[in-house]
Image 1: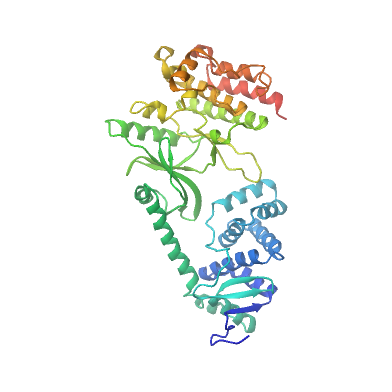
Image 2: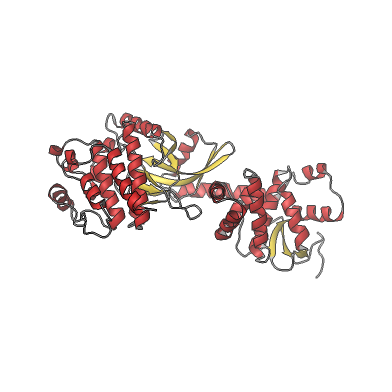
Length: 471
């Protein structure tokens, strides 16, 4: 192989020993030089991807390091980046390195942290990079300045002052920052309400918001998944931009209700991280994955546990003199499954439909099949805490059976709600074990006074069924 003027092969490739190079990379994660840390993390990820033989050892070493120092940002970012390609290996390494509880907490942290901008695909080098055959088993794209630093450290001692000054300028990180800015612009341009979401970032408490997109339309407006940065804290949140109405009193009523949702911070209710009313009402809420509607019929044990969780959350809301008003399978969201633990159900959009129904068609914000009789006929009373009990009962019916309680046109559904009962709401239904059918039938009684008097009573009844069938 010929040699070019820069000392590297003419085809810009070279081979270096594996063990010493990887040891140097791990040392790079510990330096005080931010650019050197980024280079080291970037190359470790490339090496783990290209070399299957050493991949388990790299993941194990990073995992054990992360367990010892769970807030060491370069190590966590490197492990999280590798996890985007080898998630199961990272999970197994965490479980082998520590307790299940600590593994779950650390894995959650990995899911939220910003990863390195690493391309795992095939391709040539960018400006300032060279291809390196690490250990003779895989080509890795390495920033040339890092390689020069490695070559110097391999041949002669390097002082700490040299480490601090050798990487004051580098190509790869700046190129990555430019790419991030370009990506951000493109994402905002592609989002229908991108300028409004960008304005929200300026109004929010966050130092930076990364829009992970794409924007989606929801029953109350539009939403986008984001990564938020506040000081040294990174998190994943869903930013929701609410539909606005120009009628007098709407903005004040919605703002008041959003404030009450914020104050309702309790397990089983989606937490509001930040909120505001400009450029129009918005919230940033904790990340949840799927709705009950998207998940469909649940396994019996999970359905029982969800019922116990949700009735408990509703009892807590009512204890605080708060009402949801619009419970259906679309307003029940689930956290992501972490380390194979079951997803946890949570109530979202607390109290919003009682505001919107006065300015718009309620059917736009509540699935009519789950609406209580009082939504259809004022003779059944007003919308209150008994409405929540009824509608949660119907949502749980769907969680157990996989079927909506009613079907047909809006008029068909209205007639069924006011005159019939769901066909499957029977003790003969094998999807409703023990006394569950009787519990749900009482919660969803047409007349309010026949329902459970309080959500706490509903929760106790569900808990009794759980005690009978769950270990």
